[in-house]
Structure formats: structure tokens, C-alpha cells
Length: 47
Image (cartoon, rainbow, N blue to C red; front, side, top):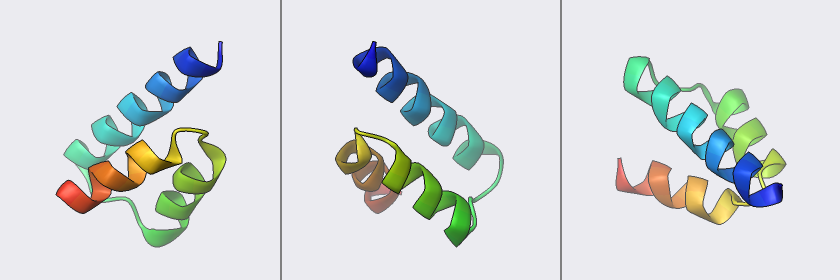
């Protein structure tokens, strides 16, 4: 279940970023709430 949640969170963040940049509070929320936060941070660093 956790894997599915992580993938959904990452996909959601990526979709949001495609439409508009996340502000710092949203970015911090996703990186701190997700157990896959390392992947999310990598996504931000690549963009």
C-alpha cells in the first residue's frame, strides 16, 4: 500500500509541476510527507 501511495504522490507532484511551479510550502509538504521523499527531491533537482 505504501508503494502505491508513494507513486501516486510523486505522480501528483509531477502533474502539478507541469501545470505550475509549486511554491516552497507545497514543495516542503510533499517532500516531508512522502516516504519516497528522496525520489521527489530528485525530481525537483532534475527540473
